[in-house]
Length: 419
Image (cartoon, rainbow, N blue to C red):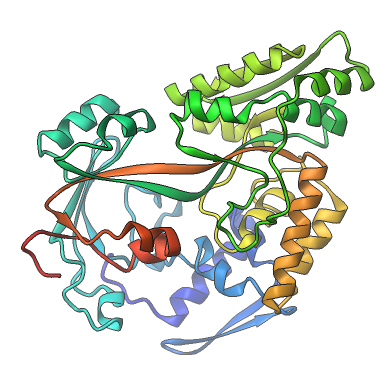
């Protein structure tokens, strides 16, 4: 926080900035139903929509509504990044060393603490986030009491889950891992070829072999515990014989070559190689390049791929993922998907105010997208976190129920400290 006031005018300024086409904000598509924002007084706004907008609360609670400092964004938006965040959270940035560490100090004016009647929150006086690339070194630091909390590498979960000196929690996450198909350009315009790829992937083996068992086989885009997930859908069967049959029907009995990319991390390389090997067994040659994030983003924007790393993180209001990936205006579409039936369902889902009817629209959207093999959904993510035993306050069952809304409103504390 930089000390400037968060006012209604600040919020209006940010929303208008996102909607201004010259700023090319990737989150602008989520605000498509919005007509205008009007300042009523210092702390009051009137939002006007072009139509009924069922996703309003969920959208504004996400990226478009993450309040930033108007002063910081106005002065130099090109430098407004994670190295100098200025927001409204529980902690204030004291010192930032990108690639090395981030030092935070307690925000005594945290709005939620006051609103909830717990002015002592957050309980930690500060937090130091250390960047340690090597997973083994990270774990060694935790065991040596140099770290208090660690998001475990998946390979470490089995090693530490029964460690008597640690509290270890397995967490279902609102993320889905998948493969992005270019359905509008190249050979994968043919749905039979997309299905052939889908059926050639052994999801169970991928989770066991590359994710160390931490993952839930996905049948569609929304996680199994998300209200918008269609419970009638089943995961795509691993069926190499059907893959070969579909390839032959599409005129590629002698083999198929597709190009694409994946991230260049150690885990990314292992996963890409495993998928490439599975595809090769049915005659599909995936020419996959391992790219850094910036290069991968460029390829995605240019549509220069047949199949590539996909999936989605932080799946809350269903419109966030649906619009971003499958609507022509979506921030991660870039012309690679244009399914008229899906687009109509997405737009209907934005408008439908009856929660039961809205749920059924997203159930149908999942059915339409899976039937068209718009993407290959692999697994819904699981993670693992380890804490020293002196860290108190984590309730894993409440996390499973309320996810980030629980963790962001229930700060931890040290044993013997204030609850």
